[in-house]
View 1 (spheres, rainbow, N blue to C red):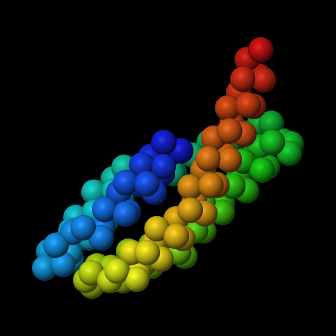
View 2: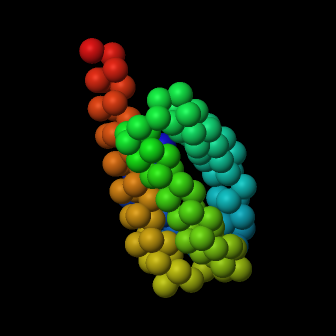
Amino acid sequence: MCGLIWLIQLVHYPSFSFIDQDRYREFQRFHMFKIAWIVFPIMTVELASGALLLAKHPGLTWSVNLGLLTLIWLSTAFIQTPIHSKLERGFDAQLIRTLVRGNWLRTALWHVRSILVSISLTSALT
């Protein structure tokens, strides 16, 4: 998800401002339907594997990993999803800016998690 969230943060969300306002509701519905098919399964696997790793290998590393995933899910549920729901009603430049700004939290969390998991796996394999 780290690579995907950077793409969303730097390209996809900012591009919302360029969508024709007359078709914005249609676009937002399309976005929400299609992105869910990509993001939800991956996030679910991440959360399940994070819980499994912590259960099999209790310790600080996998506790932090699961904590980061929990924060990502909370941010998604309570920040990004409500903004997207409001945007389904129509174009709102301020909401789009809020979405982009608020998504930096998830971007940072996924980035830190990616580094943590990479270091942990590299260490386990050497």
